[in-house]
Image (cartoon, rainbow, N blue to C red; front, side):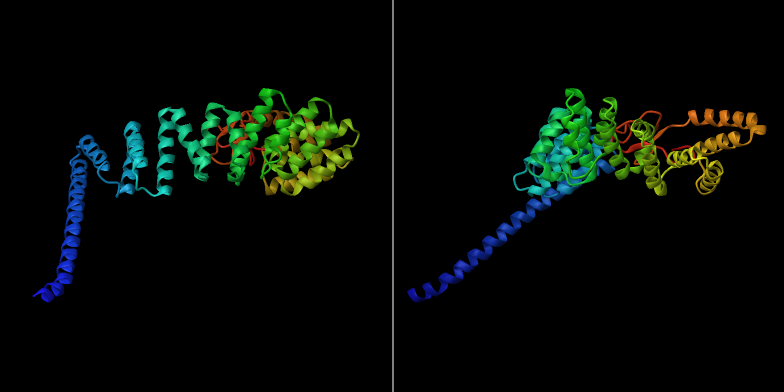
Length: 378
């Protein structure tokens, strides 16, 4: 009898294990069924156009289970688009507090929460969440952090962030932003060393070289102005119209105008009409007026330009005295037309302006506003 009991013990243990496992499965199944039922109830409210009740129901359900995180992120995005930022914030805060959430998912939720705060004007809350993400090496937090500091004009904070986490700043856009932060600090502190520091980033930016050349030109240090601006036009030829006249003055002050026209020749293959006009001016100074007319005429056939046409009229007027008055009148009309056209255009969003902006007022991108090109451009 005792032996029989010993033989039945493993069977009893196995039975208990199976029953326990089935009980746990049934409990989990019942819980999932309940959650699914509640989730469906929330969706039914939405389908029945009882949006407020449905959305509140789904938010309450989030506190029961975070298994459907993607659904709630979508729901939070819906709230944000509707302008109901308090609800979007609530969802993202609840998601972050879930103990079993994957760390990368928590980072994404924190980033979305920071964006909610920015849209709601709660900039301190946005900054604190973005700082956490940057310290954790989350590169996706860099762009909103840069936009936040650009909005609040906290240039020094942006510089400090870069100096502490410089390894994260690997792309041109973020380097351009930080370079401009350095430039703003330099202007506010009146300390040129910040311009120089801005030239040492992983990617060269436009503004530091422009500002250093401008500073040298203002001090009549023509050699340094030429150094910085020549480097600028070499790396960013689209910026040449911005400084070409001042750069020419620097060369002329040093009595080396021939070197200036040598630089113009280097820029010519990929240049806009401004550089082509400078090339023609060099030809005219050398007595090659006909050659200048032929060059500019051929160029305008390939790439029409109002500014180029205006200068061609001036060349023709100087060469043919008999029709000078007529050509000058046409040139005046063309010049008046040009004055109504924007001088600068954002190469990202298309924003146009008569004024140079280092930060595009429309798309908030640094150094995207450059001298305009095309029919009315430079």
